[in-house]
Length: 390
Image (cartoon, rainbow, N blue to C red; front, top):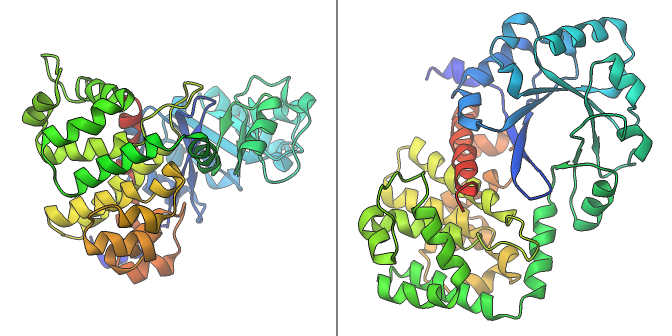
């Protein structure tokens, strides 16, 4: 890619939006440079809609007039949600523009806790979005609208419960960590011991007979493994009923990766998907993609993938990361990344942990903005596929 083209590409981030079952339903596009041309180039690079299918794409628009017909041509109306500040809803020219968008099939939402059904109707809006870290809207502001309403910056379970009481059904924020911590605190310790035993076996490349021991002790993980391997994602025609079959057909490298992610597959007592699973998958897949795009070999890509997967184990297990690393036989580069964010892997991990990294952070890692975007799209694509198959 020419350096000039790379330097002109904006720094873009994605933020997952989940429903009440912890399933991802949409992503918010964080685009610091708002203009029609920039938005179109981002959506076309890496075929964003295809990569993110079937998720909806929420595009915040601070200036609705920055989006022209040519830009909208790069969008898929049925999967695009245009988010406007509620303060703009009373502007007549903007209302006219919203009416044109709605007629073309785009969905419109208003952002701001002060929005209401009257202003929403003027802008053809179907729902409100708001910052859960601030003042919450009143119930009467949400009830007349069809929704789904969305709260973002939902960073703990108390705030999640508060916005759910208002009838909000889409959520974005760090609440998954809070939920996972509560679950790990309620665990009696046996699950942690089995998981650590399995992780240790994986780290030292144990044979399948050894791997079967902790898996047989945890029927839920064993069930998810066989369910995943038998899913349509692999395309095998004959059912796979044993670990030896799975290893023979998948190959040990692929199986090891699935087992690492299946550590997060345990459902909560309420039957919901573990919200950490797609997040761990995104980190792992993007770490690997960045490693691959920089020309590193297969072993380095495996270490990058493992670093991303294991980066949330302290949250999953409710244990300090040094204790977890001490129990595993990890490569020095992986340990340094997990404990200190040191080395090439540590630098990359620090980047993928952020929603939108700083330009200085990317520069220090030798990653340009377009490479970042092209690593992020397949990572989200893989995470969505994985979470639908476990």
